[in-house]
Figure 1 (tube, rainbow, N blue to C red):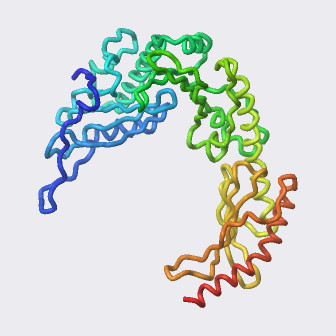
Figure 2 (tube, helix red, strand yellow):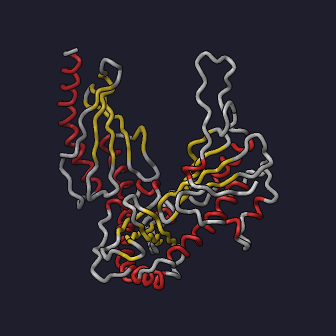
Figure 3 (cartoon, rainbow, N blue to C red):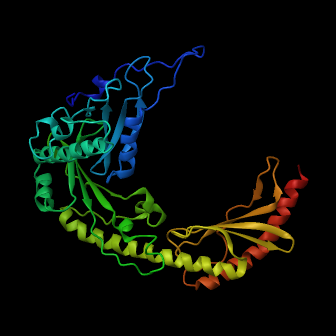
Length: 400
């Protein structure tokens, strides 16, 4: 089957309605084993974050789920392609349906080594790698297609930016329509950060590659091929997993002065991010030291995050009152102090859940203290506060 391209609003077949409750012969639709293997390989081996959603059947009264949507990264945004198999004929390669506005993207006409025809001619469903390889090849061609579209934009500002950034490794660019009928020229630029680890104990657990995977998305609004002239929209993008170490949403980007261009803006931005990333890496070691400083005062932990040292729970007591103390450490530690709550192990509400205090962040704190003094000040605060918390727990039970 040749790979086809139509617009989304022309692509969908009417899906099978849900069966009536009285149907005794209904068989729940399922993904066939050969497709399940391909999807599993795609999820676990893709070098880029692909997301599969909306698994469905393309025929009435069919128990085979043979089509789905794939969200594909492009310039730090996501585009949606539809993958359509013929569930009744496993020998046939899938159709790939592209989005609105991409009707001129014809990857089958490519005659290079990247041509998808190499994968379609001898398609075999028993090879679980085929689907991922096909999507990755088409994505490369799609990025080339988008670069050509950017080159056709008749705007001196965009052309100048392209001429100065064209050799940047990992650079992506595209033209996307906006909801108000305009267009945006989008660049995604990987940041080059030189970050050495200031600690060694957690280097294997928190590899530097995680903190190096930060990119800048730049959007230039254009109208009828001409830029509007305002400063571009700037956004830092990083993997979700990085938020336990460094949150790019907390970064205040440098100002974009008039007549600024990306090739001049990037060095200042990279120095700013580089310093903050170094502080974030150092904070991991400081959080670890803080946790270790808690042990002489509160005892050994029941649970602890031993990767990024963000959370720890300790069972402790004051007289006959036994309770848990749960700490949450911010990534900006020690500039920002930890929050903690107390949880009684002796008092429960009507639903059997343990009583928990309010979050505490109003205790003595200074980021300049040694971690041992931080822990001691918290211990002294808790020694007094747990008495009030115990009284609150007793009062709550007496009012039931």
